[in-house]
Every structure is written in C-alpha cells, then in structure tokens.
Image (cartoon, rainbow, N blue to C red; front, side, top):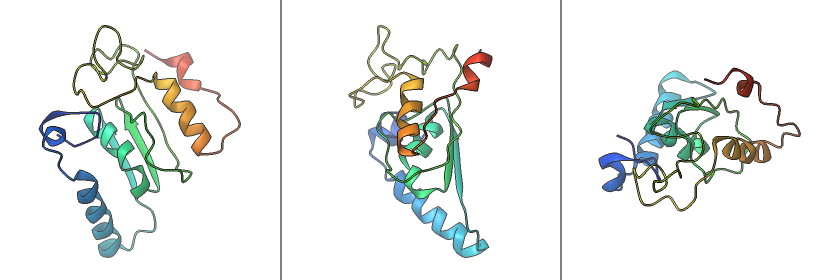
Length: 139
C-alpha cells in the first residue's frame, strides 16, 4: 500500500514517508534519463498517492482515488477518472453510512464528491469552464 494520506492500509497506519520516496524516485528518473517532465498515475490507493504527491509531478492521473485537500497551488495538468459504480471508494465522497473515506481510515476529516474535487482542481488550474465530458459516459 501507499501512504496516500486519507487512504489506506499499513503504509498509512505506519505513516511511511511515501512522498519522500516518490521525490527521490522522480529525482533519480530525471538524473538518469534527462527527462524534462515526469507524470504520475495511480489507481485506487495509488490515485490517493499521486494526488498527495501532485507537487512532485508535471501532471497526474488518479483513477478511483483522489485527495480532497490538494497538495499544490501550482497549476498541474490532471486527468481524473472514477467509476460511478465503485463500491469501495464511492464517487459521492464515501459518506453513505461510513466514515470518510469508506471507513478505510479515520484520518480524513472531509467528504467531497468526485466532482467537488474536480472543481477544486479547476480553481488551482485557473480554468474558467467546468465542462465534464465524462458525466455523459460514466458507468
């Protein structure tokens, strides 16, 4: 697991410094490859992780897991994905009869709908429009 903040598993319970690990990894990749841009992607717990570490990347793509508290004020390209029928990390913010987030961890102090997190990213990225194509195709 990753210590994605509000989510989950042993890495979060043991407060592992996974942001520090990813920082060293990004630095190593840049040094070894000369890459000008590094992007982060993650699914579920990994989605929480790349969201938490967004400040390390030139863009992120979290799938099925998102931080409600954005860890950056720097505009950051993002492709967010979440299934409406996800039974673990609910698109509604996990508050239907369970602790945030879904009872996985008690540290999350706020429940935010997926599209609420999307709106926060719009503000960080200084976007004027909130057109969401995915709503029309969501399953």
